[in-house]
Structures are given as C-alpha cells and as structure tokens.
Figure (cartoon, rainbow, N blue to C red):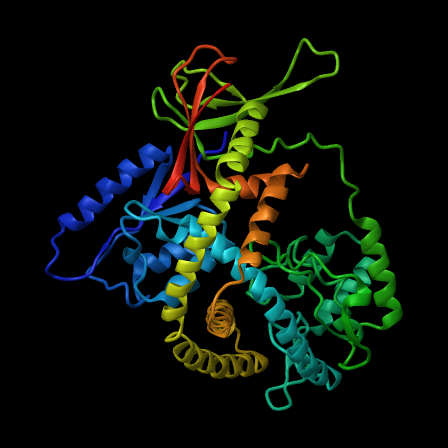
Amino acid sequence: MKITRAVAYPRYSSDNQREESITAQMRAIEQYCQQKGYVLVNSYPDEEKTATTDRRPNFQQMIQDSAKRLFDVVIVHKLDRFARNRYDSAHYKRILKKNDVRVESVLEQLDNSPESVVLESVLEGMAEYYSLNLAREVRKGMRENAEQGIHTGGLPPYGLMVHPETRKLIIDPKRYKAVQIYFDGIDNDLPNEEIANTLNNLGYRTLKGRKFTANSFATWADNRKYRGDYVFDVSAPKDEEGKRNTNNKKPIEQQIIIPDAIPAIIHPDQWDRVYAKKQMRKRKPGRMKAKMNYLLTGKVYCGNCGSLYAGNSYTNPKSSEKTVLAYYKCQSKCGNTSVRKDDIENIAIEQLISECLSNEGVSEIITRVQELYQQEKKQSANDIEPIKIELNELEAKLRNWIEALGAGIKSVIENIKEAEQRKEALEYELQRAEIIQQTQTLDESLIRAILDNKKNSLLSGDDDEKKQVLQEYVDRVVIQPSKDINRFDAEITYRVFTNGGEGSRTPVRR
C-alpha cells in the first residue's frame, strides 16, 4: 500500500497579516490532507516573504528536498501562495514534476481544470509540429558546430573539457588518465568496484568531488567521444510527461556522429572491445513478479469513513493456477466492502465513455476549451518579450559559467544545472506563447481528435494508457457503505463537462 506523503507550503507576505495567517493556512492544509488521505510529513513556512520573488529560504529548501524523494505532493492554501510570477511558477513546477512531485491547492484547482487538461493536449499536438520544424533548423547549426568539434552545450564527459576560446572539446590533463584506467580495467575483465578503488587510491574524484563507486561509470563505455567521435542528438525523445531518460538512446543510425572531430582518449579498437564487453555484462531480466497496475490509484474513497482505498492483491491459495486476486480496500479497515479491481475500473471506464465522451459531452468540452484558449491568447500576448529578455540573460550567464568550468572551476556546476533547468522551462513557455499567437482559433477537428485518442486509450489493452486517461478525468470514486462485495453503490465524479455542469456525479451499482 503506497502512502501519499504531503508537505505544506504556507506563506504570508506583509506586516499587515498576522502570525495567525500561517496558522490558519496550516489548519486548512491539515484538513485537506485528512480528506484526501495524505500523510502530512513536513511544512516549509515562509514568513514576510513575497511570492513575486523566488528568494524564499524555506521554499528553496522544499525544492531541493523534492529531489531527495522525501514527499509526493506540495499543498498550498491558494495557488498565489506558491508564486505570483508565472515564469517562476512554471520553472519550479517543472522541477517538482521531474521529481515526481505535484502541487495542489486547498481552495483552487484552476491549474487542473478539465478544459485546461484538454487544451494542454491540443497545444502539445500543435507544439510537436512546431518543434519538429524548429529542431530541424537547430540541428543544422549544431551539426556545423559539431563537425568543427565545437561544444554544443551541457557538461562535457569526464576527462574532457571545453577550451575557453575555441569552445572545442579538448582533453582534460587532470582527469583523462582516469578514463584510460577504466577502459584498461574493463578490457582486463576487472569489476567496477576494483576500478573505482584504484582511481580513489590514486586520488581521482568525480566531477562533484566525491569518491568513485561501482555506479560512477554508467555511461563511460557507451560514450563515443572517448574514441574521438563527436556525437549529439543521442537521447530518445521525452515521454508523454515531458521527461527524458538519458539512459534511453536512439538507434545508432538515428544519431548524428562526426568521426575524429575531437581528440581521442581511447583507441577506437579498445573502445569497441570494451563496449562489446559491457553489452555482454548487462544482466538479463529475471523472472519478476508482475506489477499490478491500479488504474484508479488515489481516486477511490470510502463512503463510510472517508478514508482512501488502496490497491491490494494476493494469490488465491485455492487456485491450482495461482490466480492473482486484486482489490481496492479501505485503508482504515472500517468494515466497508472491498471492491474488485476489474469491477470498479471497468465501471469507471464505461461511465466515462458513455456520460462524458458522448457526442453531447464532446461538444461541450470543445466550447469550453475554445473559451479558455481565447483567455490564454490574451494573456500570452504580453509574455513573449519578457521571456526572450530573460532567455538572453541566461544564455550570457551560461556561456560565462561554461568557460569557467573549462578553466577548471568546479563550483559553477550547480549554477549551470539550475540555469539549464530554468532555460528549459522558459523555452517551453515561449514556445507555448508563440504557438498561441500564431493561431487565431483552435481547429474543432483537432480537439475532437484529442478526445477520440483518449477514448481509444480507454478501449485499448494498454493499462498505462488507460490509467493516464482515468487519472486525468476522474476526480474521485466513493464506495458507499456495503457488506457485500457483489452489491455496492459507487458515486463517480468526473472532471469533464456533462449536463451543463463542471463535473459529473454518477451513481452506479455493481
């Protein structure tokens, strides 16, 4: 059973507000957590600080702690307690999202409104075409730089550095021998632990100044730059949540490789041998117990005591085929009936399709999305120039910090990481604003296509696709008091528009 860990971010910003402001916000946040079944594990109050700036010590500590996976959700009393500057809001929410942390408001759900969910899907579809065209032009410039060995961004691999004047990758005289020791070790079938110990004993440290471990070399054997090849456009595309796993690579034929563009630390023959050995070393996947995918995680509540239902499964001891039985059960064990996983999930899917994604429901969604789009269009018109100004400032800072890194100043590494995160968020907001300004009204067929894709996902055999749609469109499922697993009432509230209202409460009976 997975517990949702929440932290509170209460804040007041002027001398006119009293200390009770924090207390009142905390009281409301605690009640909200009780209703949602969250465990409140910490709070990060900022007093007499304004949300128009990100210079808030506890706020920054909260952002840093999110990377440690200490909590799952940040609760604010109102969204303006998180940030009043929309760029900071976008920046930090994207950091939290990368760390699998979401932001929820006690009083508002504006960022998660149903029409916003649909509009976001539409804009992502428009952005995909825009990005492909833009990326094509960007890659032209990157290829020209790469053919000359000019660094195109990001931290250089261990053992290489950026020349401060030519901007080309060159061998780092202080670290390159560590790379050679590693490749020699793998070539001689030494384990990673022994290689790490050898490097540590010789005084080598990672880029962060830490001792090497067996896990420090995850990408070394795969990095073609060590054999003198300049490689870029290597990572697989981002997933549907906008996350990129840099360990997932494109097929070699889709990568852009410029041979002999930079000085080689490792001879190509040795690099090929080590690469082949590392591929052989990769463990074959073992026989793991299949993970049960609960599609309504965090959505099912007890109508008797108000607690959250959690997924629970076990193997039927009476079954010769070891059948796995899966249920949603009340966490407080108040006596209310458990419900079969397939029963309640199928009901939620059937009702969502028939009640909300019907012809009438889709027409209403289209109307509301068009209205929201016009609001976004007015707001985004003033966003473009300020974002461009800040991006130019960030570019200048990044150039200076990368030059400092090339000169061996390691203290700028964190500055570069933070600036690149900020840049990514701003580029996303700029792209979004420019796309909105380029399009007068949304094509109705595009919105319908998005909704058709949602419906097709619900009807597919892919549980991950089904879960994504249910998590977007189902607000909550309440299991009314019952003692019979075969006879219970479930009230489902959907976050889409039907019958002229925002959300649909649908009583259903198993």
